[in-house]
Length: 201
Image (cartoon, rainbow, N blue to C red; front, side, top):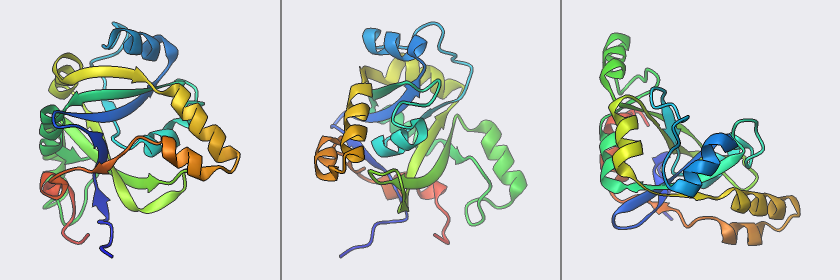
């Protein structure tokens, strides 16, 4: 059996789109799901983090129970845009084996329209798994492109989060797993993220 790579993009995707997740307070999340675009109160000047992993989003927002993250959104975005952001991203922290030195990393970080964190993937009980999941932070030009050009559809998946959480709490992990979005290894992810992974592993 082939071991799972330590760093891996897994996502729900079609030939033209990839689904990412975010969680917002109702004043943002509900209008976004209703209108298929972010409302005026959504701050384009701030960095926004998108996550291809549903379960990592559940870990981050506590199944939609954390304050300010009560509405969980599945956002279908253009694959070309997603890949552009990953290709132009910089790691959010200095990593030996990726950057020549701290100064080089800081220069790259200032210029990059996106940044990446690799965080432990999560299981149904939100416990960490051995491999890492991509978190993609968008800023500046990337935020504008995300909101105005890449966004294809917005779906409120808060009910799904609650249903899965309820099944997990009831001990019915099999039923919960069947409800999860079908995430697959993203094609060409190793090439796409080569500049974001240390040669040391």
